[in-house]
Length: 221
Image (cartoon, rainbow, N blue to C red; front, side, top):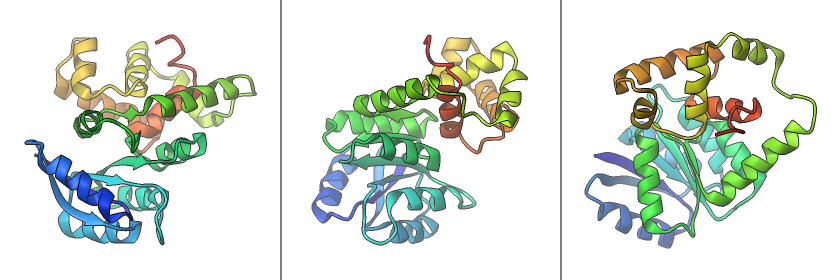
């Protein structure tokens, strides 16, 4: 069962999301919050597996909340659900550590599928948001590399297997999907991903995915 905390400043949105998710047999809503600060307090008290959050809310916004949620001792997964389809919003959310970025006009089945995917270790982006990220990557490719020298050195030291693993993580695949692609056990993939994050000195899969984008590892996928 995936335990979800809904964070949105609009009561009707929270009501609709709760009705949708509680009607799904493998997802349950454990709480609601109208702003980031409340989401943080509820997360400490309720220990949800996943926090579904809007970006723009009174008080603590979604980006700040995402950073603070992921700094907790046992952090939840964070999935952004917003009306704001901007390159800045996508980039800031992913840099803060969000596992995905969806728009509120997404079909209900897409939201449910996204929750399942990120809960399984994957990354998800709305099609338009993915386009923003790709365009931003292309813009960076036309400019001098912005990857810090220390990260470039770590990338250079990766084995071919690790580079392929990073490409698959950057493509948003879950551990189970990567296991199928690489003909490995899912537990082995989980261990390999953990070692990869350590080798790259990044905190989570989303930061690794951003690094893969910036390094051009996804250009030929």
